Length: 296
Image: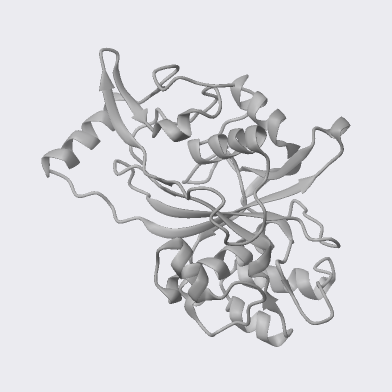
């Protein structure tokens, strides 16, 4: 469904408008965003099952960031993600750095964070050895996942211990979204798309989520439009684009422009609204919720 940019604007509270105005005047300094990575984990299903599916987690209502929202696996880059020099299978960190427009250490840290967070939150490990993928359902791997989640070990050490290489050939760059400047918790999130490898299983293993499941992307968009599930703009518009155009091929080929999105505050006769680029708004029909709260 096509959506005009002036339709169903995402209204913001007076508190948000005041906070943004203070930043605009220089009376308040915007928080510097933290780098984070998120993986849009996909799989193909039969036509009767809705076709392309994404693995979605619904975050606990008690969490400080995006409470109760349906999200993709992901999280902040950990300082340990910069440690070591893990082996890669596929495009090199230098090639990723050029594609993402960052330096090589950050590119490698983002890849580590993307694969690590996906493993921590779904049990899917986008890394393999010469013998193939490991069975992460084994007890020792469940213990490793818990240690990573508790920040007790570095992901690069786990990869080295098991002679595993990051499967950068399975990832494709999708977008970069930065939390609006009025928020007190800000992230610069690098989104990657990845198809579920054969033999890997996604499960609801994250302590931060209440549910996790494979959902047809078109149904997820419909549920958001109907108010049955809450989503923030990055997840909603990503799913809407996937429903419209299908999944990207793995790799770094510039088959699509890599969006760089930072929502702003717009104003009209009705008040403040969340302003997004037209190229994003053309997907979906406005089923985004959770944006009218005050600064967090």
